[in-house]
Amino acid sequence: MKLVDGKVALVTGAGSGIGKAIAVLYAKEGAKVVVNDISAENGKLVVEQIKANGGEAFFIKADTSDEKEVELLIRQTVEKYGRLDIACNNAGIGGEQNLTADYSSESWNKVININLNGVFFGCKYELEQMEKNGGGVIVNMASIHGTVAAPMSSAYTAAKHAVVGLTKNIGAEYGQKNIRCNSVGPGYIETPLLEALSPEMLKDLKAKHPMNRLGTAEEVAELVLFLSSDKSSFITGGYYLIDGGYTAV
Ligand code: NAD
Image 1 (cartoon, rainbow, N blue to C red):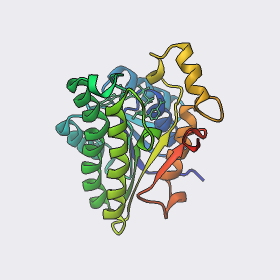
Image 2 (image 1 turned 120 degrees about the vertical axis):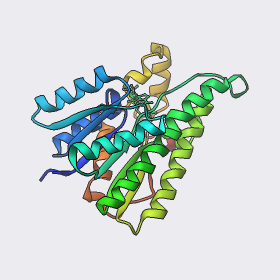
Image 3 (image 1 turned 90 degrees about the horizontal axis):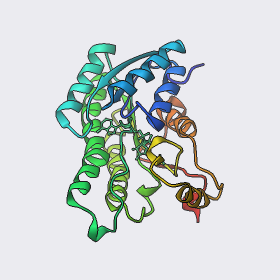
Image 4 (image 1 turned 90 degrees about the vertical axis):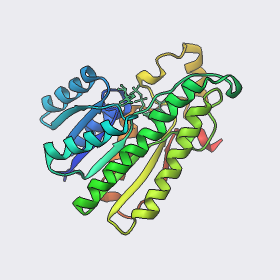
């Protein structure tokens, strides 16, 4: 049996990388998927890929750091598919690399606006809709840097720690409303987000994972699917690492 058959699922930042893999897997497992991204070109390609595989998907452009756009995204999702059962707040950026004292306020605000405020805006309007539906599931994309430092990326570390905390609060507040909310903490994953890194840096990064490799977006998508499905029916407010052992040492 398909794990999310007939459900309506939204994935933000689904035009690339981890979000794309989640959207493709949700569709393969029977969901009707709203693919969101700021890039219409990439988002539409993902919709085409899902449809070519026999799935159902629809693209909605929105910048998740803009509250009004997120409110509209949820409204348009419901206009298209009638309800919202599953949401994965995945959109995020790496941001500036610098020591904290040298980190520009502009970059700080940009990373916090997308990686934290965007997740909050998503949760806020998703929860409102899920309460109307009588239930739902949210998965927020954190990172290993929701629990350990990413030196030179203080805004990223701060935002991801905050996503873990926000997720715990939602788990606590909505436990009796048939809405579950969890976050995931991937180690370094082979996606375009890491394209800027030199081969030397990639080698060093791999070595920080006891499995001595990067993860794949598809591996992360499998965990997100589990947390989005009824297989995880007693799991809420949690933070689940998928990091090849990075945080074990
Ligand atoms: P990616 O760059 O491949 O994909 C991110 C997507 O989000 C892009 O399509 C981009 O256009 C979109 N996006 C960016 N800002 C947006 C906004 N404001 N509104 C809507 N869409 C927006 O990156 P990825 O590696 O797939 O990262 C996805 C998530 O996973 C991020 O939250 C990231 O922090 C997290 N993550 C990534 C890694 C990794 O190593 N790649 C590890 C842990 C966590």
